[in-house]
Length: 259
Image (cartoon, rainbow, N blue to C red; front, side, top):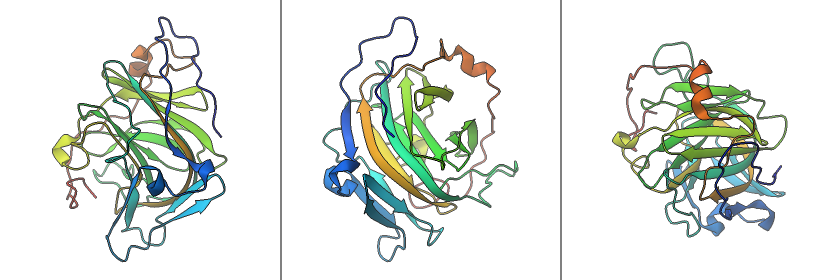
């Protein structure tokens, strides 16, 4: 369900730039015809599949947990400059249908570290954040790709609008116009492609340790940070009691990212 851009009550809010539509599910076409590069791993014989649904696309990697599949903005003509200094927002409308991440605890802290659907947003200096979507929460990857800060939300009950906003060194996530959680941006570039990319967005299943089925209906990018209603400043973030994880790198896949 798409919602209008809302300002909420934040002091000294800059004028919002027009949103650039990156995927419009109402057109009845796959993202690959709208500027996205669709990729799977393995390149040949992957059981993950994409299909047009009413108002959007379904991405399903549940047939084989080892498969990866998703959409890269590498050649997308409409992605604006994602400048942390001026801020940017990635808006995505989605509903999680299924997610299997059992057994993906990579640092033996009894908390799984992978998701069947992820959203990556990297700024013009390759700093940003990767979000994972489970049935009952949205959470961020730390710089060693372990489970970090999170917000509890039912992602399966209905299609929701998720706004990932970045400004300077901070990010925050709004869901249907309400603040969910936030933290600091990361630099994942030591893991190579695609994390060393600039001005980059990815959505899909980027791990061999989880799988999922997700409906996506709309994606927009805004060249300014959408304020968070109900959150006066990100100073609140430090008091939220988010999970902190120490680096503990595991074996990497071909992209350089832990599997």
